[in-house]
Picture 1 (cartoon, rainbow, N blue to C red):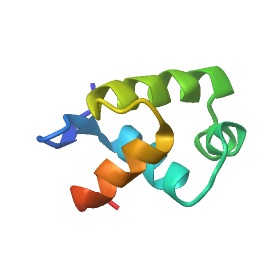
Picture 2: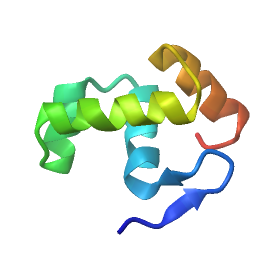
Picture 3: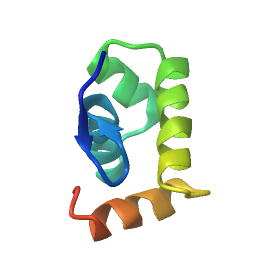
Amino acid sequence: MSEHVNPEYNLTERELFIIRRIAIGRTTPQIAAELNLSPETVKWHRKRILVKFSASTSAEMVRKAVEADLI
């Protein structure tokens, strides 16, 4: 089981990695290739992250992550 690295948003290491890749403009297929995962798995992670940030878009999620000093 993954260890949570951010108590405020209850993020895992993988989720934090994905947020950081989104912030630098990586696409879902690019992130999937980096992690050796299917794009569908990355989409699932993205949806979970959006929920954790109470965000409706990736841009809003990234903004909140920046405000929380996660990236």
